[in-house]
Length: 431
Image (cartoon, rainbow, N blue to C red; front, side, top):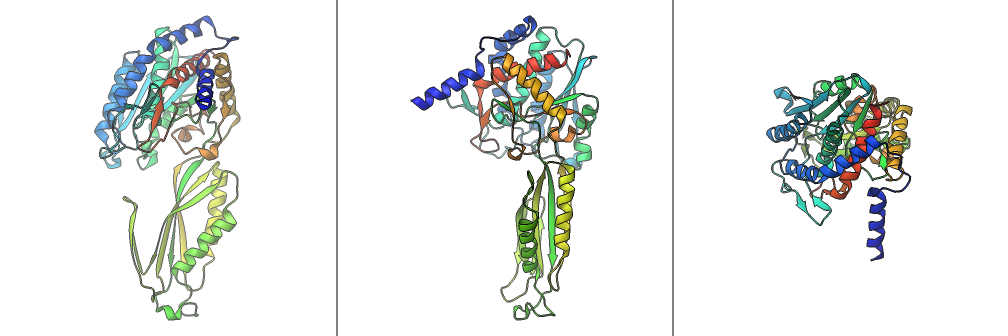
């Protein structure tokens, strides 16, 4: 009972105003609009959650994009569906825009796709109690998209967007970005170059946190060759160590010599070794053949690298290359890298945006907003624009279990988070 009482009290601190609010008359009107529209916002969320939009369900992604496009058109935004080339096997992106010259030029970032494909058993929005719903993609991140929509709807209803420049970009492949990235993220980057600020609405990590930094991600692969021979000859000058011992040396040295920098992690995700090795990159499945009396001829490992800056990434890669080059007898090895998401560093501009959000939250009586630990967040689309504009992310809905069949969204926080977003945008476009 005491635990339930504590949770209720914490929630009241989140969503109820307190004395000493510093909201203008116009801002109070915005708040009233959001309160009046909140039930509609939740119904809209349920509607789009019930449309499957797994990344590879191209028609489903387009259908969710159409629902949001229609909603944005109704509040005066120009909408554009940007298809991707057929070879990318991705649906495309929805961009909506209002053009003007007042205040900061703002880019708002969401995504339409989810990790739940058409064959997933988790497909529908289902209430658990009066405030929590199981919702595939409701937390990551259709709820964040709804916050964008209804924050802008409240501003439009109060005639506050007439001379603003706002672009809302909803990618259709955030959960599995189309390759090459130069094509799939081209439009997002171009939008950033026309903007001053980017706000990302990925899943919130807590009501009183926002994201000023995200680590980048990179793939790596080590391929080792040894001399195939009878196992009785291993370690002699003619046979050497074999591919598996050499791979073991490399991975051990990565662990002992490269590990340790703040916010740097690298993980070997798959490992194969034997006489013959085959791996299918499309399915992430492999096969191996070998015998205990034959020295392994091949070994392959694939992994991921997370970093907080390009400097850290390149420094780490160089250390890994050096280790890979120091081979055991009669073996050879090579390492290759593939870029994915760049890092979003904790810049002064990002921290200044956090300070503005924090002031909005305090003025709303919602409490202090602090920077979330970037070591606990994954990569996201804001990372692609971070080198061009000041960024803030993690402004979306609260919930739990993202990317799992237990994903939930907390409906009781949507109104409060929408208020915070709308007031922040209003202040930015009136600077």
